[in-house]
Structure formats: C-alpha cells, structure tokens
Length: 169
Image (cartoon, rainbow, N blue to C red; front, side):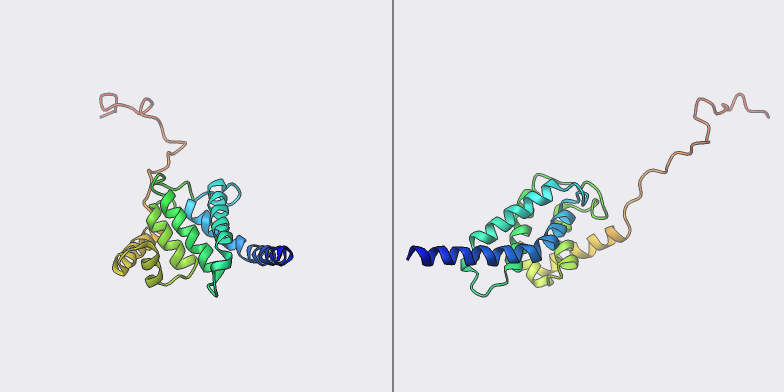
C-alpha cells in the first residue's frame, strides 16, 4: 500500500514537472504583463506564478480531464484580481496606463486567447461589461495619453528671456 502511494506521488510529481516545463514560460509572461513589471525584474509576477502553480499542484489529482494550463491560468487571473485591489497603477510597458481589471481582461483576451464569455464567467462580470472594458483598454493601448512636452535643451529659461519692458519697439 505504501509503495503504491509512493509510486502515485512520484508519477504525479513527474507529470506536474513536465507541465511546468512546458507552461511556466508563457504563464510567467502573462503574469509579467499583468503586473507591468520589466521582464528582467519581475518579482511580483514570479510570486503570482508560484502561488498559481502551487494551487494547481494541490488540485492536480482532482483535474479529471480538465486542462491543467486552463486551471493554472484561471488561478493566476484570480490571484491577480484579488491582489490588484491594493495596486492601482502599472510600472511600465504598453499596459501601464490601464487599471488592473482592464489589464487582466486584455491579457486574457489577447495574449491568452480566452473567449469573452469565459472571461466574463471567470471574473463574474456581464459579457457586455467585459466587451466595453476590452474596447476601452484597446483604445488606450493604441492611443496612450500624451505626457507633457519634452523640454528643449537650447530654449532660454524664463529668467533669460527678455521681458516685455526690455523688448525693442
């Protein structure tokens, strides 16, 4: 009995290791997009991924034909959504102007290819709301807000500019 359990545990560990070897890179990229951290320095994304993979491993035996990638992606999305309550703005990248919910919807829809209906069900939102958030997020990504104009290095400062009284008539 004990040997059988050890064999099952070893098989489970091998299956999960193979899954992680194939899926972790893509899931880490999705987590990095969500957190808007740089790819070479993404501790929040890595922490998010590790937690999602740990939960996926904990439920590995109960998947019963369910795609483990879908389960890990769902766990990643839910964990991000819960944590995003405390973090409102991104750090950088093309998604930095989006709020957490818009980032999550955009990453799930565009990067992960999840259908609108599935995203709505996962987040507990009406499909029309997901559609609207996705459309607004795309518009913001394609046409980001403009920042202040860059300072000209050769332009005189206000102190150096002649005043109206000094100007020749």
